[in-house]
Image (cartoon, rainbow, N blue to C red):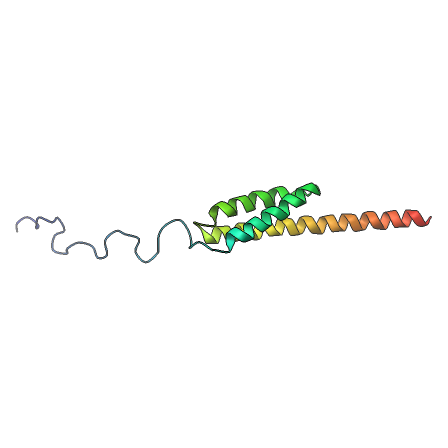
Length: 114
């Protein structure tokens, strides 16, 4: 019963595969999505236009689109998710604006007939 070999691993040897990334890929998210940057820029432009129509949700859309632009080259999954939320904010703001305009038009035309 002597001392273990000089390597320090005993009878079993070093662990297989080392301590690298294993089968999971590099840390930091998913692969970059080449379309995410263009979609995020389009969402950013649409939400900036929404600000001029006083859509409060456009602020959240601008923030999501700006973060998506910064994440497009490193984390495709996060960029796609942020793009989705940016477009949802734009769509809800547009829907609310159309409803308000329709209601205003309805009330105006109703009062004009009297």
